[in-house]
Amino acid sequence: MAEVRETVSGVDQGKQQQPKPPYGHLSVVCGPMFAGKTTETLKRILWAKNGRGQDIRVYKPAFDQRYARLQIVSHEGLAADAEAVHDWDARTAEIIDAGVAVVFFDEVQFFEAPNFTSDILQIIEELLAAGVDVVCSGLDMDWQGKPFPIIAHMAAKADEVHKLRGVCTVCGRPSTKTYKKTGSGGQIEIGGSELYESRCTIHWAVPDLELTPDLFHGR
Ligand SMILES: [Zn+2]
Image 1 (cartoon, rainbow, N blue to C red):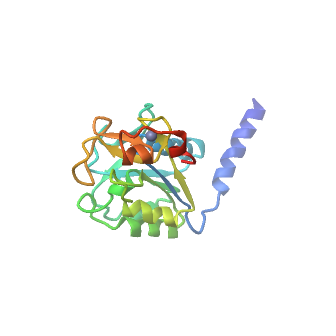
Image 2 (spheres, helix red, strand yellow; image 1 turned 180 degrees about the horizontal axis):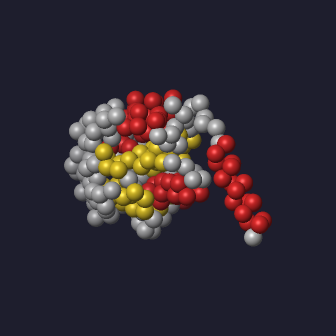
Image 3 (cartoon, rainbow, N blue to C red; image 1 turned 90 degrees about the horizontal axis):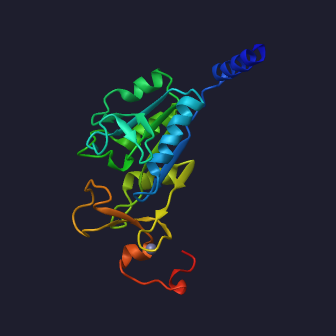
């Protein structure tokens, strides 16, 4: 038993001595729908919180109410508490004053007007400059293949980009695009598998094309 106590006390001391970094680490988790972005983000949240004992905050856009108002939930049932925000107010100062180690922004591509009243890019810059790590996750492209500006900007600046791929619903090869079954409507229309599929670039561009090995080489 003495040995166990020693180990536990050693871990605690390690945490207390951890110096605050002078500049935060920026990670981006992105990809099409159904590629496992939420699962990857939740793994990182649970590891930071439970594995490393870090103080964290999780934010998501307030208009997104697909599953639960104040949680992000993966298809596998992993969950973490999140705050749905529309007005940022004085949160940057509160986060820095509280010594928060990591801030997560889920569905970061939607942190813009009219859903969000502040400048998310500036908020992230300020957090990083104060030594807070930031993890942004979200869709990299809309269903028409156009990059979402916020995540494109963040991916360019990131220390680490984890681009996830799904499985094409037509051919089963790795997919990087989100295909909209109706093929119409605006850039943002909240929906699940009734409206969207994850597809490889070829089946996103030409839905019914039969593939030969030649057509698909190297993709
Ligand atoms: Zn395909």
